[in-house]
Image (cartoon, rainbow, N blue to C red; front, top):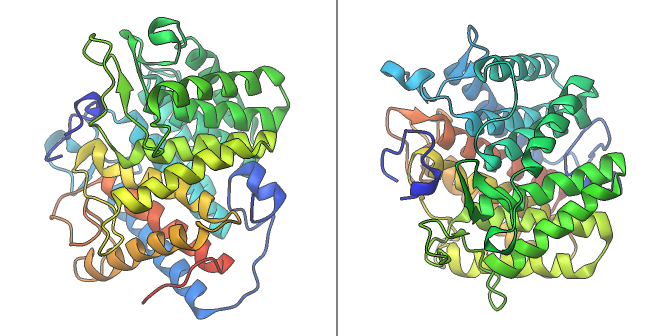
Amino acid sequence: MVPHRLKSGLWLSGLAIAAILASLAIFNPSLFTFENGGGQSEKWDKRAESASDELRESFWDDKRKMFNNASPCILQSCSDPFNYWWQAHAADTLLDEYARTGDEETKRMIGELFEGIRDRNAGVWPNNYYDDMEWMALAWLRAYDLLRDEKYKDAVMDLWADIRTGWNEQMDGGIAWRKEQLDYKNTPANAPAVILAARLYQRFGNEADLEWAKRIYDWQKRVLVDPETGLVWDGINRTGDGNIDVDWKFTYGQGVFIGAALELFDATGEQAYLTDARLTGSYVVNSMASPATGLLPNEGDGDGAMFKGVLVRYLGELAQLDGGERNEIASMIMANADSLWDYGLNDEIPRFGPSWAQPPEELVQLSSQLSGNMLLEQAAILEKLGLAKSNK
């Protein structure tokens, strides 16, 4: 179980494609066209699209303009609690779909979700959790990249100003996890902040943002990364004892650190960052995935069900880079996608549970659905780029 991430209240069990794509960290068909014409590519597009359809049809609440917490809704599970960071990843998943298809209906829904989340958050963007705000800012920055609507940029800048207030010198630096616990610093609140700051620098050229990215990254690597293995630890001083949670080894943490390293590599061209990303990627392949199947672990329901999806998003970026680890990582992603599609569906309906090796329960949480959608979107990208071959 992951007690520090139980904000959801729903814990039931537990460079590259082209230079511009690397800098934007998105797959945007309006910027780059693939012409390999293979059936494999078309197959994974269709699978990703079917999962996108299921997400809209089973989870979208047209009245609230947000996604429900679960499907089917049971009592308060539709809208209570307000899972702010789930909605941020829902926005990013819609953006995956829009980047793949350019569909105008998806564009409209992104705009509606933007309004729905803000309305639910009392008309503002900041909340009490720095990691949540970072995910929201990353989603809207990507929306700005794709849609060029200033409202998304404005939201990002509001959030970024608030996020920076989380830095303090307790635990020798780092961004706090939440505003009520400023001495607890963790990977979820720091690595995504690096991704955000580095992307802001690449979009708008503010040197201060690059300095923030480097500063936060340096703290993260120095305090919460095992230099020998690349394992990313979760946090420090959670219980006020100054200790590092060395036994908390979550896929999420590995993913966001890989993403942070890749963004700084992209922003600076410094090889050391790519080396860091590769080391952690190797740790995932060799120590977190099943040696027999290559499958990533089941990390439970609630927030934990989102963790693998976050990891796969950034592993996908790493797999797009030249290097000896590329095929190994891409193959692992495809093994998970094959397993999810072959063994993780009920009656061929793309509804996903926390395990990518077995069908979900009747009630499917938004977190696990989003995680599965993220996986299929990465599979579609890798197939289109010819970086991996599906076994099925």
